[in-house]
Length: 113
Length: 116
Image 1 (cartoon, one colour):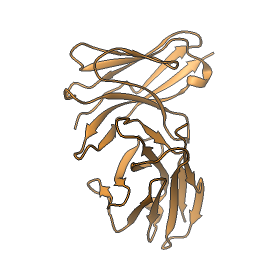
Image 2 (cartoon, helix red, strand yellow):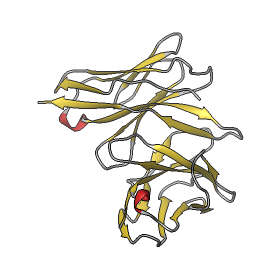
Image 3 (tube, one colour):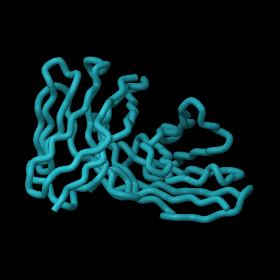
């Protein structure tokens, strides 16, 4: 199973862009990268996902390197409410069209006023 | 859309008793549901994957006789912790995957179990 490596924690000033890196050097060609975040004592919230192209939605942008061994989640204008643990996940196929998420340790992002 | 609920949100039970946690997809049919466990300051650990109408697939090291999973309908899965012990105290989170071709998992709010 592919695994992800993320920095344990990061700080970001409010209003600035938060760039959260993730290494997934053993990712396979058909495995997607997903990003979720978890605010204390809540269930994870979906942010964005991608395969090989850069993706953008109303929450964030996802930049995936050409070799797909790493990616960066960008929150363009971080707010205090973005303080959370951010998980970079590789979706692994387990047969029969079913997939599972393999959670890494995540990055604890603290947005500072 | 894509709302997943869990009930109860928290539960305290005595050692040796069993506890059932429900996971419901409120506005979509969930072909696959997942159960995770999270200890304080740790990441989510997948316990099992269940498809509607079939037996759950448990991750290595998870006791299937202790953590009973039933996915009886496309909108409901239950996790029963049998003969609970204090070490089973944890945050249990379910997620659901809906339509074919869409692989995002939508997570419930979690259930905090405390075994005394």
